[in-house]
View 1: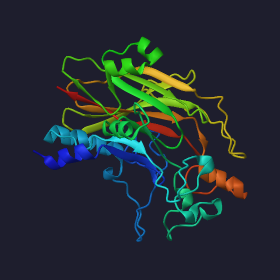
View 2: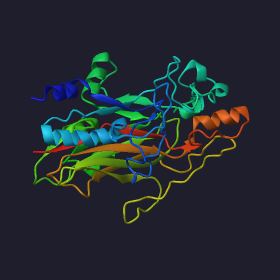
View 3: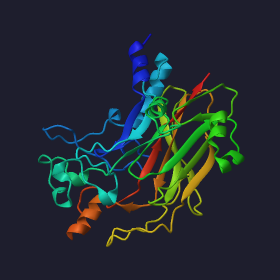
View 4: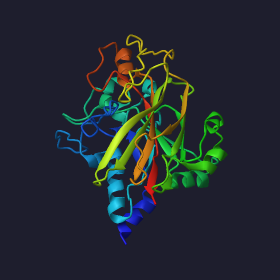
Length: 345
């Protein structure tokens, strides 16, 4: 009966993909073909005895989603059918996840002057933490019952701080007209939202995914929207691939689907950026060009902003010092939706 797996699927509906102690989507060593995998890593263990960090598949969400496909195929239950959220994990009572207004994780690193101090010798410090994250819940109304219901059905997504708005649906009946209106009632009627499962048969063509992303009204423009796919191949091995689905500007994809960088408007002398690159919104109907109706798969959206300054650079400018050698100086904030799973009949 595999009741432990069924209980896990029943009760563990969400997983935190980003927070102050770094980003847990994936790691460059685990996803070497993902050009955006090296985002806000946290190369430390939470322990007194400092040891060199070695990334493992069990540390990250994307590998867990892939393992879930394998468990589902072998045992009939996917215990890792998680929705995604972000949270701060701050212990300061201050909930900000803004790069320009980041108060650290603890009271001991809540000001720029204290962020250089290590928590323990050789360990993390304020500047190795991330100004992240946020949880978005797509509920019918602002009530406890509606919010918990949306969380239970995994209709949630994570951002690394900005209030990016994302809608993600999958089905076989979406048209360009639906994309122009993005009528929620029509979208739900024709398919499933993020967190849902599409059931198909061997005769079905690739599902159509309706994707709409809008920038934070007070934040940076969007660079691109990507679809991250995981699937099982003919041998039962879990595979992954990142597809560029929509992007700003007149950039043309390469023969392998790659896309040149959007550019960088950050002025390191002032920690300011300009929104004269990128787009305020990106939307598309996307289909998997490598779809196999016989293979289980998952798909989730990753929406990326244009480059903006990291919190450590704001601190360095405020104190009149050189940029610290902890973390990047410029980052691309992002949103991660909960997956939509495809399960063959």
